[in-house]
Length: 440
Image (cartoon, rainbow, N blue to C red; front, side, top):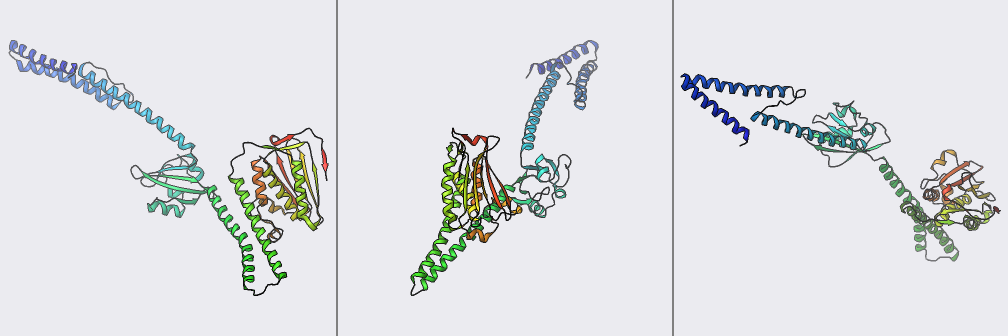
């Protein structure tokens, strides 16, 4: 036992002994004992009254001071109060960190009571669900988020699978919802913006459908010819050569499609380049001009080059070759016989570089221009296939330019022609000690 408890025992023993001695002297021992113990009880009740007063007014009053056993009681209460305050500070700090982290999260977070009322929500809940805290605190979630699928999902109680709905704030935003029960029948509703994933999934479906469609025609042609040849008892050499030429054309078409798909996949999945080379664009264009003239064949397009021989480009020669050849080949395919195609390589006023392919072709209507770099997008499907196009060329150009910090500018007018310009920033342009000349 502590020293103060022994003190209280000695006080009680002293009162008893004093009452006995004084009682023998006065002849009234019970009266003397009653007075002594009554005084002790009064002092004890006084300390209880002080403790009771503090408990009722502990927000304003301080813990009373005392000596002896009551002093120990008050000191222990004081220690407990300090420990409680320290725990509250820790909890408040943790709660503040949690709220700060939740506020910074891009995902919407809503805490619901057992009845489905909103108890708390982070700022992202306003962007995805239209829920503003503390304005909507105490409101039923069903009154704000009235999507029938969500209401059925929440009432069903089976949250093993995620639910995807359109955001009530923006119908084009797709939100994936996950509900997690916790605590005393409370629920945590988490909403994640999956618009990009939904668009990627849609693009994947369209991509598979387009590839399947592009391969179906040549495969059907090849299958038809094989079936025809297999059913013929006698084959004339002229007919055989004709059929084989058509089969070879369809095979080459599929080969071009596969090559373009592989190139596009390589550009999309390859990591950013860490080492670039200085590309001599003049020699690159000279080779591409010869290839374009072979592609032109009997159409006799007039192809010219106007280039700054002092200008080089920092990047990947193979990727730039693919991008530039696609632009030039498109110009050949969509320019009528005898038309002009101009290749220009020049510096820009800001220190960058431009590569431009201009033609006097059929042109493109204004509403089609924003979609030209999409996969398999064709303005004239029949003409594109007839000319050997895969619908992936400008998509390859876009990805090559992105990997070179560049952009593609398109200008076109129906019946007049088109101009495709690749702009490269100053960080990609390099100078050599040569004069500026033109090559025709």
